[in-house]
Amino acid sequence: MPSKQNGDPKPDSKQVPNQQTKPAKLTRREKQVMILLCMENTTKQIAYTLRISRHTVESHRKSLIRKTGSVSMAGVIMYAVRNKYVAQALLFLLHDFLIDCPVALAV
Image (cartoon, rainbow, N blue to C red; front, side, top):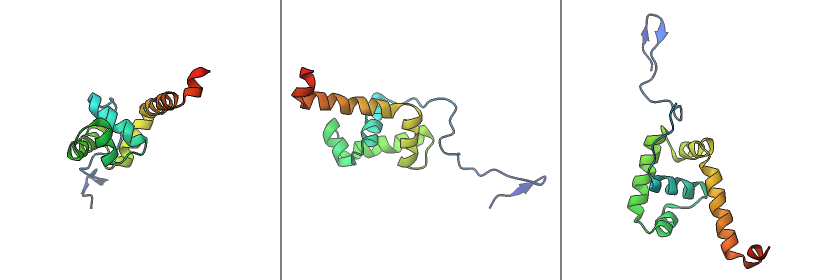
C-alpha cells in the first residue's frame, strides 16, 4: 500500500513496464531470440534453431525482460512491436518462404 507524504501518494518502488526513453542495448543473440519469440517459437524450438541449450534461451528471455523494462514476455513482445523487431521477423518469414518455394523464385 503506498504511503502518504505531504498528502501525495508515494510511487511504488516497481519500475513502470516498457516506459524506457532510450532503446535497450540488446546483444545480437538477444535480438534473435526476441524475433523468434515474436514468431511464436517455444524455448525448445529457439534452442534448436539457434543451436544453443534451453537454459541459454531462458537466460536470454530473462535478460530481455530486464533490459526492456518488462514484467513478462508479453511486455517483451510489445517492446519488439514498438521498436520494429516484428518487421524483421516478417522479413525472416518471407526469406524462408522464398527459399522453400521454387515457384516464388522463378517470378
